[in-house]
Length: 58
Image 1: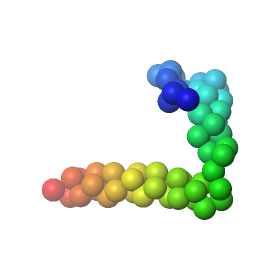
Image 2: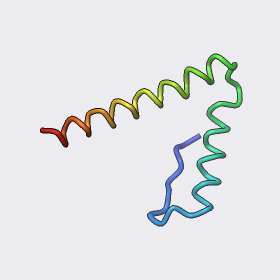
Image 3: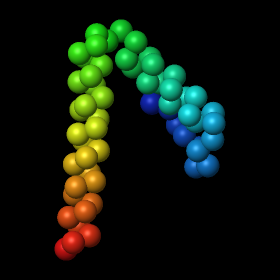
């Protein structure tokens, strides 16, 4: 399934698209695979936040 294209206004329809996409991506995963999938995304986002904070300090 392709990643959904979201509108600039971020509507309720966009939320439905994201939920459907997420379901399709994870529906055949085991519990451990699903946990790894979410953790990987969370760690990547945390790195982005940390890098942005470092840029603010400099």
